[in-house]
Length: 542
Image (cartoon, rainbow, N blue to C red):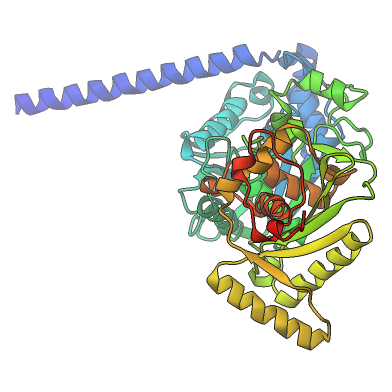
């Protein structure tokens, strides 16, 4: 018995030591919070009961007054007044439409900080009685919950005005009540791995707001399956909202393959779910007034000046993390630095059109690229006359577009050949499609040359011309919506094995090869051995 009692005493002592260690860790954490964010208490004249009541009464209905009062400017190392974008972000979080609102904003504009302070306001006054704080994994989510807890437990102004009664204060869950919020507010941590289904409080209380941050970043998997699963999880969280709830996902549209950009693409195609809404905030926008996202902090007069203030790593970083229009990093075959445009097409251009025909359900998914590509003897340059990319669901629509491009191109150049990518099955299928189209439309179709090119083997042909700055695109093409898609694939092309969207570079490489086979184009210095010479050359078609 004595031994049992001794063991029990040791166990109690161990528990007490653990409690002491936890309290010390919390004290250090709160002290660090105070060091990082020093906030002066109210002066004695503002600590009277009457002054406190006035402050609380005004704070209930005015978040920005609350922000100025409890998070004053001297708590920031580099303070700048909130701007128009921050007020818009707060308005979004105040909605009650049951939607997922995607706030894709530039880095360094205070998105996360603004929303964390807003969650403190919601929590104190019960504006949203059940709050979810989520991220990709549980660790950043618990960090967020801990930040909220530290704000509430270490801010001397909040401690003076609000006598919070805590029921839960773990890193994953918070529950507190007060005189101004007698029913209390719950907050818990969510993640991509933790389902929100069935997570109700008091038998009936569902999430009234879910705030998501750090849901995907540059270390996240952006394979098609991972992206789809991420979007599905967002939707699952949305369905866990109460009827008057709202969900906010703030982040960066940092990569062409990430989930946020997938939603941007769906929105541009007009197929984005009605329960998802985008709010994109580029650092610099020529069509916005003011052009700077946060002029109070970044009073730039031009995009160049804005870059200098925000210091992106490179152009790719600026496009994605700051401008919210991600670009593919330049591959080895078509580096962006060698991209050039022409003002006027020479009169002696002879061209071919090449297409790799793909159909996708409802016009989504795989895209079809069509490239009209020619050569001018007078300038010794290659010209991409009509670069085109779109998703088609119907073969007749694709053939309609192909003939339109041929008609337009024929007014500018001599189009001598039309090529299709075609393995045995594809050639048979599209031969039937073309014949059916011709009978249906009563239109004679030009002869189509089917080719079975090995793109990776042929890429070195056009690569030499690209590196020599001999390939030109129409003026202004890079700034068009289609140009961004087409050239994004071209610049990022690293070969077929890279398993990335490559319809545009495929047709560009194949059009170059077809042009050479038709006896058109200059000789590649030192690269002649790569040419595919056909019997047509011997028959005097040079």
